[in-house]
Image (cartoon, rainbow, N blue to C red; front, side, top):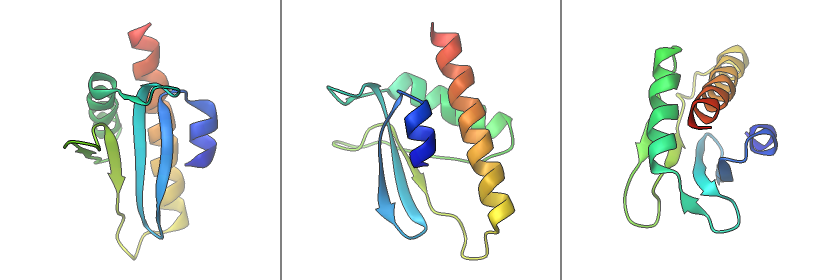
Length: 97
C-alpha cells in the first residue's frame, strides 16, 4: 500500500496495524481534503474489477478505504487486490482529468 501511495497522489495516508488498514483518499495531500467523489468512483471501479471494497464515511474519516481481509488471505490474493486497487485508482483519476 505504501508503494501505491508513492504512485498515486490521491492517497493521502496509509495507516493501521496488522491486517486492519486504512487508505485515506484525498484531493490534495497538503490540505488532506477528502476525495469523496473519487473515492466512491474508485470503490465502484474496484468492484467492477472483482474486488469488494468499502469506504468509511463519517466525520473525521471521509473517503477512507477500510481494508480487513480474512485471516486466511494468501499472498497471491493480496497481490491481486493491490493490482486491482492500483488499476482502479489509475482509471478514475484519468477520467477526472
